[in-house]
Image (cartoon, rainbow, N blue to C red):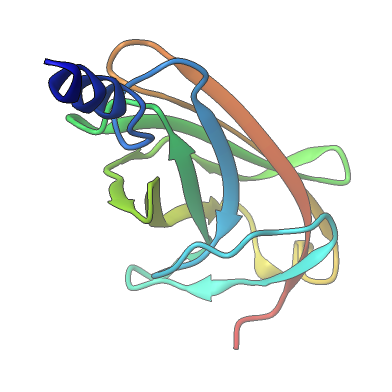
Length: 145
């Protein structure tokens, strides 16, 4: 009986399951999560449909992975919004964290208007239960590789 109780308690504390005190960290990455410090460089990506974007990544704990996350991402350069996205994305459990990569923040203007400038990125995500979390950072926009 005691072993069953310990197993139940351990299952309740799985960071890849819905639980108390969820966390959210915004990073960058098309295929892996990379942590960001304010001012780090981020290269524009020329996308398959002819536009430009920056690949972001999400790391969370204690949110509901059974459905998609909803997000709102905004990138402001010199007081004006130049990047925007309202993605729906799925996360997978990797090493006791929920990771989603390749979350695209789309450029709404021309690359020349943002290259070399600082973009302030603010993101908010929510799970199917309405749990909302926010994070953000600043990046220096670089030309595509």
